[in-house]
Length: 63
Image (tube, rainbow, N blue to C red):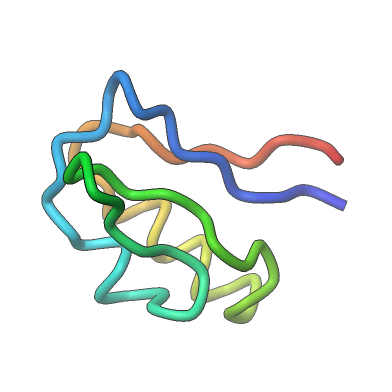
C-alpha cells in the first residue's frame, strides 16, 4: 500500500493539501504540512492533494 509523504524541506506551507484532504494532512507547528492519517481521505482525494502541491513536496511511498 502506498502512503502519502510530505518532504518538510520542500513544503512551503501553502496549505492546499490540508484544504483538499483535510483528514490526511495538517499543518504542524513549523508551518509545514504533515500526514496525520495516511488513509484519512479517499485515494482520489489524496491524489488531488498531491497534484495540487505547487512545489511537488508530496509523494506516495510504498509501505
